[in-house]
Amino acid sequence: MRSIAFMVLLGVLAVTPATAEEWPESITEARKAAVDFALTMDIVTGALASTCARAGEDLAPRAEAARGAWVVANGQLVDSAHKYLLFIKAAVAQQKGEEAGDAFYEGQRTRLFADAQKALTDTFPEGGIAADECEAVIERLGSGAMNLEAKPAFFSALMEIDDAISRIRER
Image (cartoon, rainbow, N blue to C red):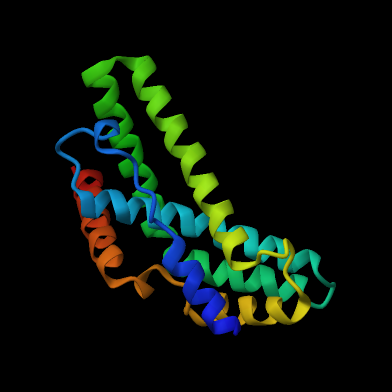
């Protein structure tokens, strides 16, 4: 059952990408979806670890370590996804003005947090996460089962984004 819940969680993420008119034409659908997925997973895994850390004293250090392992494995891609979102914000600002760029960025942040909350609510409709469910969360976070590479299409696009960001850093 828990395994099915986590598959549902991964399946729910990134299903509500921004509408076409919110993104500059040069931004690909694959990259939009990958950015949404990475940033939403960052929020979700943080919320899961935080919730599990509060579920019991014995769970707290393990939940924090598991989230730490997730960040080590995925942090660079999440950072690159965020930088890509900032690039898009700058493109929107250039095309439509600074206020439009700011509004775009805040709208994306709001939507990403809403998507993460919906994924958590859909996966755990009762509201909380029981201690035994936290055991499964901690195991999946720590083992890499919830890493971004679990979605190969998104992972590939994220690697492209990360490569592009790295090339920019080298200049």
